[in-house]
Image 1 (tube, rainbow, N blue to C red):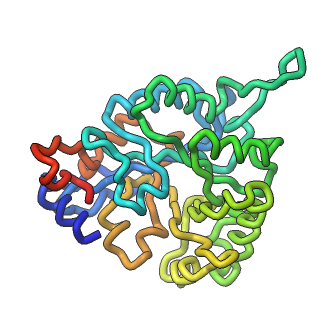
Image 2 (tube, rainbow, N blue to C red):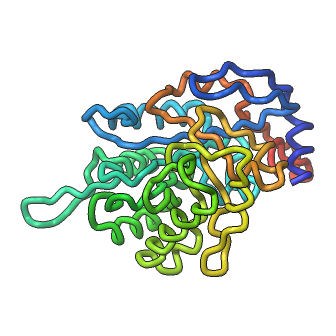
Length: 303
């Protein structure tokens, strides 16, 4: 990781304090641009919801983000130095929270067969990726178990999501805010959800260790990080990354340089409240790299 820091510092210009969005603070001034946006959506429907977006907005956001030079990453990419991100694009993560039915919905045909609803989130994303194959591998679905995930056919849909190249994350068993329960009870929200994934995905659930906090908040100065970092499920770490919703752009420098705590407070922006033009105002956004003159030269912004 030290190599990554020096590479970024040597190749990217200074960044200055960017304008704060409604719910987030401006990023800390740093010696290189290290902002990686992590966006979240909830419901995708023509019916207006507080945290919902229309299918057209989702499609238009994807188009604007693609045009702005972004490339989709998944949680594993944050751990491996973003090696999949092409030199001429910049990283972006998109997540969908809660596992609403309009995220993955089947339509019954008159002949009894089923097709994926073209206006549900997974269909819109897949269609966009089919048309823009250089946009990245997929998106992240954070699933909570306070309702039937995706409405019905949960096991089939969860496996299909993985087959499509997307990722799945943990959004807890009951969607109870961690601000309302003692840290000693966090396991009661995290571990049963992992058991639910395991019963439907088998060994594929081994890789589910990203956690989105219900309500987008995690208490500070309460020992939460220590509890989460030490929690295990069936011999593996139960949580390796934790995601807030705080209206800020994630600072990759904080993710890599902190002693584990940065990994548990990854910033996200709710796109029901913001727009892509607002996002692009952040001056700490990582920039596309320059092509290397030689294979012996260092990459502009990654190890």
